[in-house]
Image (cartoon, rainbow, N blue to C red; front, top):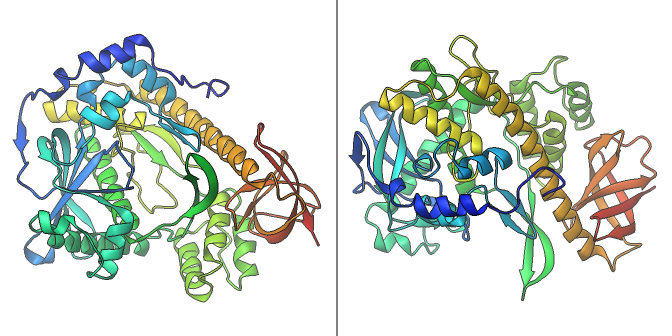
Length: 471
């Protein structure tokens, strides 16, 4: 963390503010709607304690649906220019590693007072949207409200229930109309996803490694798979993020946008598609790429995750950008969304906290708290720190993987090439789900190729895992 510019401890001043700001952060100011009676609920990982958003939905005439997303009012606890703000502005994100979590804000806030816990009244910023029959989002309004989380649900349990209602979901017996809400949310997500994919959004299946511990000891790195409930929440958050960006545009406010450039290595994506029997146009085309990916999902479901990983690597990383009404931001190539921002996780991402300050100023009729020039600097720093956070997470994950593979030198594994650069060629094993460097026999390999590799060396302290390609 220190080597990559992060503060891994909070200053005494920041910790004191977290305690002293607790009462001020719960006080209501201005027009705050009382929406506690609505059937708000959350869906997240079983062990998540920093809950940033809740949602509720209702049917409207003309087959439209109303979607409300409540985002924790974190700004109320973190004044601009405070010690808490300085720490958050430096780190810009919570860092999640196999060795532990380094939160952007003290846990007294992020996992307690500013977290939307079940059974707790909380202040929130509500994004109120109308979703048309075709999945288009219209009629957006944002306002402050007090909300109450009636049910904290988990991704896997909700996914199982949506697939088979006989699967256990104990909260259904305790919360009236919760089953109706889950069905409405599922229908909403389907509409939103259909609209985005008709406009060129990429539908991919990627997996990440999740550390598995037994009696305090790391025993495996398993795939953390996508599922129906994760896709559902992702669609709702994309809709809320886009709606918030357009809300600020409509008020003449600058904003921080999240964008993904058209891929620079489109020629390699073309070659990858051709190796699977597909054909793509010469210029980047998200809709054509999605059609190819959809066909491959059906033709080769087993190998689709490896193909998705290769495409994700070739697309590159997203970036932050300052935008103003007279200087619109760039679109997001992968999401098929032009007006897109990060707004729904202010407990763990600084751009979301900045956006919340802008939104609350617009709601109150106050001037923007940031200039476009100030947002330019924040955007550059957040992009850089996000890359550094990813590097920290990868390094610790590699150390964990090297620890797991320490006794398996000489074994041969199936792998997919995930990176080719001057610094080396990298592969990811299929099981266990770890990445390493090909130090011999890498000539001719490129991103997306599948190959067999032999483990030749590991260094758990440095997180180095070295392979050689096997002919």
